[in-house]
Image 1 (cartoon, rainbow, N blue to C red):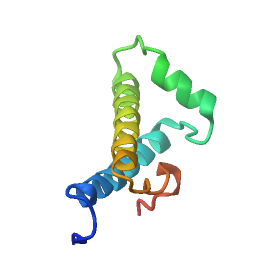
Image 2 (cartoon, one colour):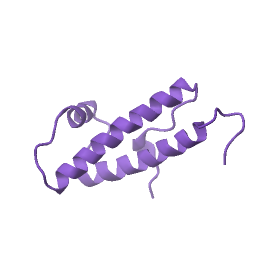
Image 3 (spheres, rainbow, N blue to C red):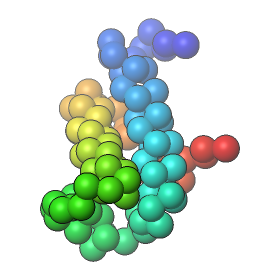
Image 4 (tube, one colour):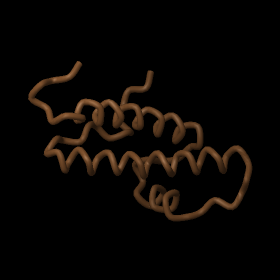
Length: 93
């Protein structure tokens, strides 16, 4: 439900952020990626994965979701709205 005091689209961005958080956490858990380790995240984002197997596809999906989540966070900040919780702290079950 939208709050009329929020900028237009902010509710949707917050919902998107939570949905991205849940999918990031789900994939990171499946791939055993430590989302709290900045070096691990930097490696995941900056290193192309040469393999064409299922793990490659999951890693590339996780990489894209993390980048997209960062963009949503920037848009929320530009709207002067606090970013929702970190993906690591999202409840997925």
